[in-house]
Length: 271
Image 1 (cartoon, rainbow, N blue to C red):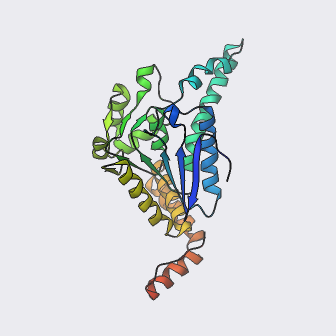
Image 2: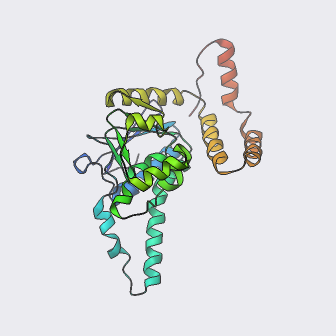
Image 3: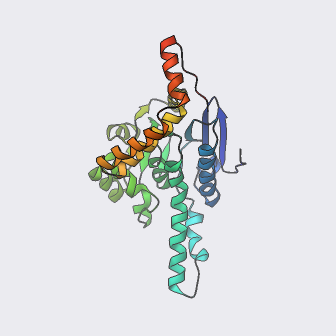
């Protein structure tokens, strides 16, 4: 496992837990955290023993969003006496930040977000890239970029409408208002709102363990198919899954699932 300075990463019984770990800075995402999130997702993808990931945070809240020191330092990083080259550098920086959250979608393993306290600005970009989101009743969400003079540019405006619908996404992005945990469940931003952070973490761990017990090959295929179907026509998605299963259907996992069913026992799959 790589060494991390801004994340707390562990692996137990097939479940990888990736916790934002700058509690003294309200888990604000500095440049190092952006880079390490991408590294952690690549590690999750490439580690056979890690079957599912949980993204959570240490401290009293999930994240205060992007670290403003990173934001205010951008002009120095892109300085150039040619305005065209300066703007090209800024575009490349934005694309690099986007890649940190794209890595969650590109990871073959499911990633479940467990959100307590505040989830502000870049936290929405981060969690909307996850497969599922869960929160505690003390959580609140806000697309804060509008209030600091920014157009959100690392995923919220692209992913949020597909989760909560275009009208609600526009309302949240235009107003920057707070969404409570209960409302987040009502608008389907999260799958479930738990009463307490303790109940949240226990509930999400139970879901993750359930997923980890399934066929890893089939879970990876299912994530691939759902993500593909979201961005393609039904005909294209059906054609793709036919090609996928033509290659991956007859596996050791299929044999084990059949044997376990016949023998009335839990299936045991290889990593």
